[in-house]
Amino acid sequence: MLTASYVGDHRMSVAETEPVPPAAGEVQVAVAYVGICGTDLHILHGAMDARVSMPAIIGHEMSGTIAALGEGVTGWSVGDAVTVMPLDWDGTCPACLAGHQHICQHLDFVGIDSPGALQGRWNVRTDLLVPLPAGLSLEHAALVEPVAVAVHDVRRSELGDRDRVVVLGGGPIGALISLVATDLGAEVLVSEPDAGRRALLEGLGLRTLDPVAADLAAEVDSWTGTAGADVVFEVSGAAPAVAAATAVAKVRGTIVVVAIHPQPQPVDLKQVFWRELRLLGARVYERTDFERAVELLAGGSIPADAIITGVVPLAEVADAFATLESGQAMKILIEVPA
Image (cartoon, rainbow, N blue to C red):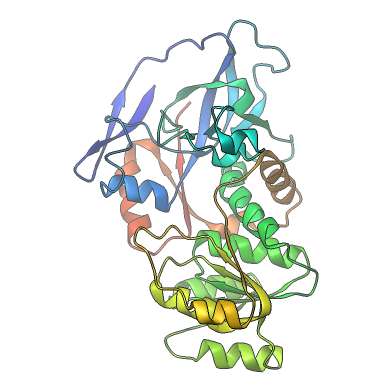
């Protein structure tokens, strides 16, 4: 089988390896498609070298079919279509005991902290599996993980029907948050400086604004009758967006921080105090978010073909990363040979 690994120094290596039979309680998944994302780019850039063990088989957005069952596995069959919720928690830390296993204090994020999906055969514990319906293609199902991120972000916001929503950043997660929010009946404005991304979002029926050429706060005032946005999602990871979030949220509005900020950012706490704003973090997802993501994709609420920019064979994984890094792609999938 082919395996792609991060080997350090901004390099991915592709090699032939021998599959290992699944252990007791595991299944072996024949991986079909793997999505690459901003976190994978961070790994490639060396930002997570202290966390990954090289050579690191990365990849956590995936779809595939069960190829073999380990000893004692029941309830699953060879040929079942699956994706993987790549969170392995200890179940004993204070966060887990409080019911927040998805943000376990010792979380193993599979595909980062342990081997992931960029391999032809992947052995996975059955408790990480999520079944896929027959009508959902494996190509579209590779989007379940990022859609689950968006579902979790929106659920954290407690978004209401007809709420006015500002999404700061129109990349893959910003686009998916916008689509999930729209599906719930919200009105959405996406602030995105890249013209290509704005064109794609507008093609999906979303309202956009270029924050470089236009005054976002003035636009939101005009749109909401000076009330401000009910919910603001900060997805860009840029300092100006953090400032914009507190400027455009309404009195008692909600700001959800979705982006990973490697460095601390200034926050206008005067606005948080003055408007009684609610500032929330949203990280990864829970099982219910994965299940809802499957439903949205299977039901066509997420236009998967528009989100998927291209599909690249595993042997050309380095080219896929280069395309993603260029900013000219929404979502690149890696096709893994059978």
